[in-house]
Image 1 (spheres, rainbow, N blue to C red):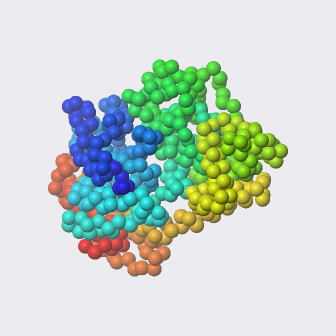
Image 2 (image 1 turned 30 degrees about the vertical axis):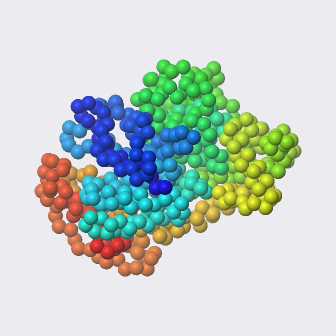
Image 3 (image 1 turned 135 degrees about the horizontal axis):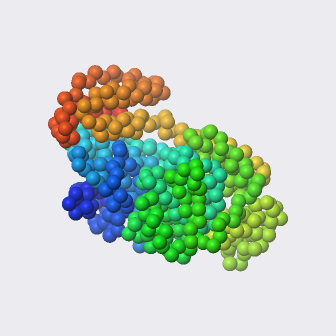
Length: 524
């Protein structure tokens, strides 16, 4: 089964205002798109009459298919070429795998290469179609692309959703936007399985923050409606009587206020200092009861206010993983009742051993997240007794829980342990991966520049790229071959698709080293 089901390249018809597929590639058995896909690709289509996108935006959405199977849509968009363009063009990959970092890097490469060499971009897609989800186990995936004119070997960073929902950029952006105090209020609402709506002007900010918030729940999993980007056409989901977690563009908030809501937590990511980030809509109460343990939460809040929490995604995730390890350490999953559930007898044991954690765990037993997690832990205990091998998905978390059993009050020790585990696990990324993603970012900036200032931008980009290349080469002990200085680009012209622009971009591509063995890795 291919690692993705569909690739789409779309533009909006200037006359009709409707999205039109320009190119579609479906390597799997499923050739037809889900009917609602176009709604998610352009969730803010009407708002483009008064604004434009500067540079590129990336976002991800989720659709639930038959049988509860989730399909992820990874998108990247930029404004269409031309001075009078009103709408952006979108490239999208639909996949059943939650490889956020991986597909983001792939889309960045495809977006740039599509403009430079469409044939190579299609070759990259065909090569990627031969990769299955089971093959993606290492920190870095290496692909050899046989393009129409040359060959390249490219490397992409890979997520590890089996062990951790690890999303680098998402966690850092979350801590820059949301204060630690507000983050703990949102975290409390998620543990209570409230109805939550997150709003923002930027789809990139909206999508990344929503995914990061749900990622903080590990080892729990959000079991209810989850729509990181909710199109206006499907706003009726906010009237559902069950819990949900959705993201919405700011322009749709007036329509949301007209819906018959029932106690919805509204999180405003664009709120100013004089406005609250969190507010309640459609409910009689003005506040959400807190179930977080006071002492444990104080330790978590202290760590979140450190400067490292704003720059290190590993540290942010480690803080919440250590929180759950301390919270769940008094739970004895072998004390399941006759029904095989975590019942009152097991809760009584928690109350006797850790009275400070008991109120939180008691409140969480009514949530579907905790029920699914507890059922999994109880099943693993039974499998261990019967001699069946234990699955490796939660081995690291189990080690942390065991550590907390021996040191019940040591949140600091659990945090230090999980931080060291993260550092060792992802050390291979820094050692194996050349500065390709950053070089792609620099080349992407060149692709959106006009020919008149391409020369100055290219010189700055090349200087930055040289520093990255030398740093990586020093680590590997290899010698970087100096390339020749690029010649001056063509004279400026108004047409963005003119031969002069294409020539300038091709020269920038050569100057950034995409034909060098260091980045490409293949013989040309």
